[in-house]
Amino acid sequence: MSTKTTKKKSTSEKHQFGAETSKILQLMIHSLYAHKDIFLRELISNASDACDKLRYNAITKPELLKEDTDFAISLIADTKKNTLTIKDNGVGMNKKDMIDNLGTIASSGTQKFLDKTKGDPKEDIQLIGQFGVGFYSAFMVADKVTVISTKAGQKKSYIWESKGDGNYTIDEYNEEHTRGTTITLHLREDAEQFTDKHRVSHIVKTYSDHISFPVTFTDSEGETSNLNEGAALWTRNKSAITKEQYQEFYKHVAHAGDEPWMTLHNKAEGTLEYTSLLFIPSTPPFDLFHPDRMTRVKLYVKRVFIAEENVDIIPQHFRFIRGIVDSEDLPLNISRETLQHNNLIHKIRNNIVKKIISELKKKAKNDKASFDTFWNNFGATLKEGLCEAVDANRENLLEICHFRSSHDKDKLITLDQYIEQMPQDQDKIYYAIGDSPESLLASPQLEGFIKKGINVILLTDHVDDFWVNTMHEYKEKDFVSVTRAGLDADQDEETKDNDTTSKEDQEEQDKLIAFMKDALSGKVLDVVISKKLTSSPVCLSVQEGGMDMRMERFLLAQKQLAKPSLKVLEINLEHPVVKHLAHNITSDDAKELSELLFDQACIIEGESIYDTSEFTTRFNKFLEKALAS
Image (cartoon, rainbow, N blue to C red; front, top):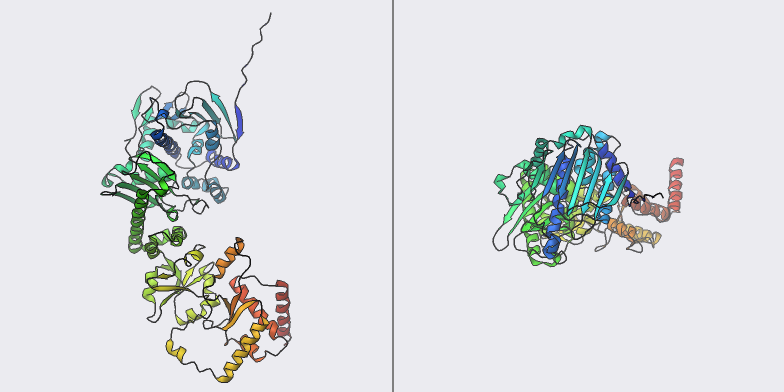
């Protein structure tokens, strides 16, 4: 009698990486990146984060720790198998976590990163350091990665494996495995140096010495040694921290490869005790303008990690800042839900914002060229804070805002500098909103101001449409848009008083205005004589209290307005075309010429023409007459 042997069916599941992840993996696998050792920095950083998360969760659920209460990160080398293992006893992962965290790059900036790639490995790989791709950097040195993980509080363990070929597998792991995650890198032949104790020790000392958990190395002989100090960097005295240590901590906490533009390390003592170690990047993060506007400063309480994303410890307009804040006063068991409504958090936030603004003000004064670079990177983000009516620091924020102006579009100035340069009889801050300084300087709206030497602030960021509607003055000087109807660019009161328009001229002007209002009935709100045009025949403007045209176009595009408002048409009586119209308002072409002038004003301002077909017909008609004459 024969006996059949039943083979246990494998429960291994095969998955495909997300499209974006596959592209990142290909960059890693074919990487020519000169500093491949950053993979270890990234994996140690992830292990540290896993320990931080469990330490926080255990505050309310101490049973998650059981008898394993001492967090640690272990590096284990096997020269015979040519493997390097990174093991932690942190929060761990279950099957779903593995799919979410290892199968997809859950970064809002991933697509933007990929959009910047050019297909040249040498150039593309330089972006890796800026992007900080964490776990996937392992494939720069390994041709196969194995991850075994047991989530805290759960019994089942899972094993994840991939060769970086577009697929990965997940299976239950039936052998014994303690809480946390074990990552084994099956190193490539040209990466065997990463099993060497001295090489690994140097990497840890360089990149990860600040990690607050002990990092140990076990060699092939079973000998274990400690590699880092294991003390949180921000707890050390500033004089004992080198520039290089600050830079590496920034790369750890920001998952970035650039150097910090500014480092702010402060310890507050007294009624409110906290330490902050904050960094301003030298290059904008990829997700800077993501709709979520997430802040990424980590909050610690007595060296215990509490939360990171969207903690109200800094405002959203400072979301480019990376770093940590460690409070001595907040309770360890504070929940993430109550963080947003905690008075201590708000006090710390207010103090930190004041400190940041103060340091930026010093930088602008002492190193203008460097500050200009910062402003070009983050100015548009900072100005979002001017829209927050409840922000007590927005007046101080406006002081450090820099702008381009009509006097010199290539130079950034503050509003204080603008006011210092104003003529004595000027009592307003004039501004123009548009798409670029060049287009604004070519706008008819600025003609009179430029001719009279009146400086105009040039606003070209989309946020400018909003903050000028919430902040109406600065140091008792009203903000006034040059698109306001009836605005007079002439600062000379004596010239204004000596208006010697004859009775005949006045009657002709009145007839022209009445005629054009009738000809453009339903298309314009009013027709007025311009006091700011010098070389253009017409321009559009809005009535006092009306919405700026670019803002209105934005709201129309967002379906927040049903239809555009009627504008005011300003006419230049000194222009030959307008003079011709004034002398020939009874001619057959007078109405069409009025409409053509209105269409021209719409085109210049970027407004829609009522009927493009009629405009083309009118335009061609006048061309034909001009050619025939």
